[in-house]
Length: 366
Image 1: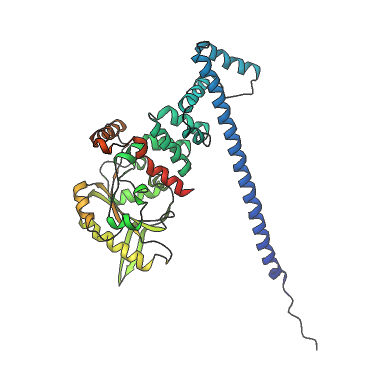
Image 2 (image 1 turned 60 degrees about the horizontal axis):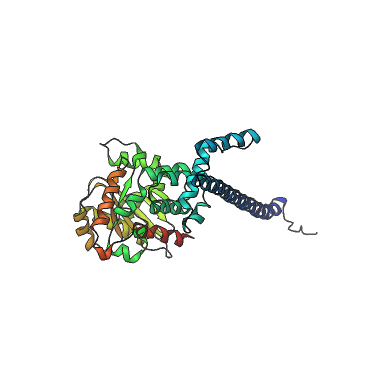
């Protein structure tokens, strides 16, 4: 009697073929997406070059006193009449192109950066930023963080530039040593106006509001933060402990634990955070990852108390403050101006040099 041979079933044949097809499909899709991005980038560059050229023409004609406001208005009407399908060349936009060109015409450093951004982003930056350093800061920030125009507006409203210069994060010595770039990643003050919290709120209210607005919260934290979980459980001995918020930072290759405090910072808070970091490093951290980082996010803090508490702290931790309203930009600008005035003559720094950490971070991410 002939023994039946073990013939593969159709199902067995189908699975490897499906896997191969899926890989090919993914490759084709990735190629399409990459090409689309390249096309969009080329189109955007061509548009920015066009607006630059138009702005240059208007600027030179106005400078020679041969053109006035009336002529620019006539130009806008002429374009609309001759080719109604062309949009975006109203007299208002034409004057913006002139301003755009005049803002960057002599700046060989920033001129290449503006060509990489969409026109909407450019108009926001050159119309709202008061100094070259501020423009450079947001040009780099948009490229590094891939901000939408709405997100860019929010960061300007939240005085991201002023805060980055006038408020240095309070880091432990261990954190500075184990993660040298941490000073350019973490902030001293986080603006959480988007949570919509009343002045009186609980830690649970704060935590749940962050979870509901997680995308905007990560935008405020900065690039490369990946959310892992809330109330993250740690089991040590026969007891359970819970971290308020746990993230992973790709650039630092480290877990980042956030502990939320709705009151004023107290040194005893660091003991709890140190315990969590020890448990994370022993039981959660993978071998190739760097030591875990702790962030104590408080409603208020005394900087001198924080400095004393962190001076002998043996964990990579920092203490930061949060606020539920947008900061007063004029107050921050005045504070920054005073800070620069108080510098000794031999140590005076140009404000553009103070923005160097943001530039370095951008280079590290390339």
